[in-house]
Structures are given as C-alpha cells and as structure tokens.
Length: 144
Image (cartoon, rainbow, N blue to C red):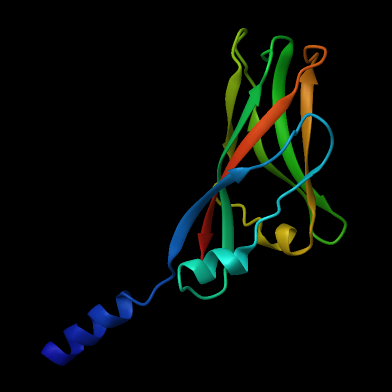
C-alpha cells in the first residue's frame, strides 16, 4: 500500500512547470506589434524543457497624454493559417486616465501565433487624442 501511495505522489508531481515573463510590447496605437520573446532562452534560463503553452495574463497600455476620446481597445492575432483571435479587450475607458489594463483571454494559447511570427494588432474605437504616444507591457504565462 505504501509503494502505491508513493508512486501516486511521484506521478502527480510530474506535471508542467509554468513561469511568468513581463516585457515591453510596443506602440499598439501605430500598427502591428510582433510579440518577440525568445522562448528557448527563457526556458533555458530556468533549466526547463520546451514551451508548450503561452497565455497572455495582462496587457497594460500607457498614453503620454491620456485616453480621452477613446471608448475601447481590442488586440487581435490574425493569421490566414490560424484564423483571427481576440487576445485582449477593454470596452470602457474612464476620462482622464493615462494607463489602462486590458482584459485578456486566459485560455487562448498564443504560442502558435508566436511560432509563426504573427503580429498582434490593436483596434482603437473612438477618437484618440491627436499626437498620443502609446507604450505597453505584456505579461505572459509560459508552461512547459
């Protein structure tokens, strides 16, 4: 009985390992942004095997002059081979804010898009302030 319990304990500990990576994502307001992350280097730094799953946890966007006039933002990955998928969205933006946190699909595996160098594009609804410069940070969960 003890051998069976010990084997069950060992087998349940042999699951996937995951870690988070945060990196700059670029100016999503000015065209496509490619998610360029060296997954092999990130897993090697942690002495882990190849990444099998990558989920977007957060996508924060900052504007130097705010989001007044912007009513929503959606980020998509679109590829002829893989189709179009909405990655993150935010449909209500309060006036006067300079930083927003988009709501991301926690189940969407973006690894196939990354492996095919598919750019992510943002759709901004409303009228963004003239001359606004956007910067963004993305946090990913990588599972091996």
